[in-house]
Amino acid sequence: MADITSKLPCEQSEFYAVGDVAWGSCRQQLDLFAGFSPRYTDGFIDTRLAALAAAEAIPGAQARAAAAEIVLTEVAEKAVLCLNEWQKLKRYITKSVPKAALKASLEAAGSLIYEKAGDKNWDKVRALNTAGNTYLVEHEAALLADDNMPTDFMGNYETLKNDFALLYTSVLDARETAKQGTQAKVIANNEAFESLMDMMLDGQQIFKNDPAAADQFIFTEVLKEVSSAGQAGVKGLISEEDSGEVIAGATVRILDTEKVGESGPDGNYIIKPVPNGVYSIEVTADGYAPQLIEGYRINLGAVGTLDIFMVRSEG
View 1 (cartoon, rainbow, N blue to C red):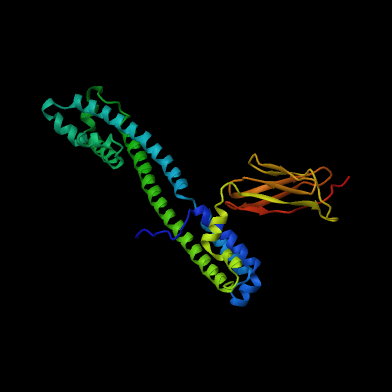
View 2: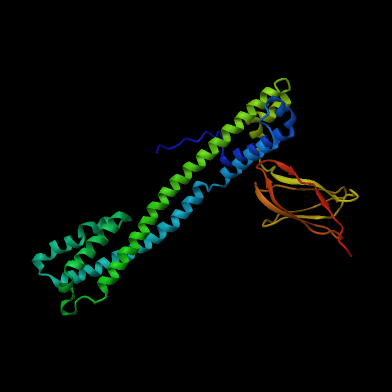
């Protein structure tokens, strides 16, 4: 299958942030969008946001490369063992055949493959293992004669050969999986991008007489907004749920980070900069039950608003 080219005009992380912001703007103007086309509903937007999140959740090339690297490390370690065992076999062959037959015997056991196998050429290692094992099977009696070769060597050699073959297959599978995963992410990104651009073009038409509002649906303009360095974070107002009274001195903690904020006398807090991502946020205040907000997304380059309503603790 031919490689599929990404249609994204920016970094992937920026695209996901643009998508979140733009679809959020679409929801805010849902009445106008629905008047333009009845397909625009909360459910329609939810579906597009879910597709965007699914595309983002597909592991990137670096994550897949890391997984493949682990397998390659195991293969490299096993290859060293294979080469060492072949050198032992070479010594057993040297002692079991006449000098006149030594060169031909070693070549039959894989000596011509050995040098290439030692250069991290995994298919050559597998070929060397096969040649050595075949020689062992065909010349077992001669190799065992005069207590030359240990009786368990042939069985151990075959086990090592089979173990390496399985690992090598894993490497090939990891490479294919990485390629397919990359293609899957590109396809998902492209589909999410196309649906986003379709909505944004509709938005530009809806607000063609209102340039400021139309900017919310121009990709490059939204990209500028989300790409502002150091602006990612969260802010909001903390107040009592029943009375609406603002709560000063409440602690807002973004879990699994060192990011902590505190509400001021007016009940407002702000925490930035925060790397974009999905977080759990814990809010505590004296006399109030703790709050835990899970799955809150902080978009690249944007300070989101999260207002907290707290309930007085009993007793």
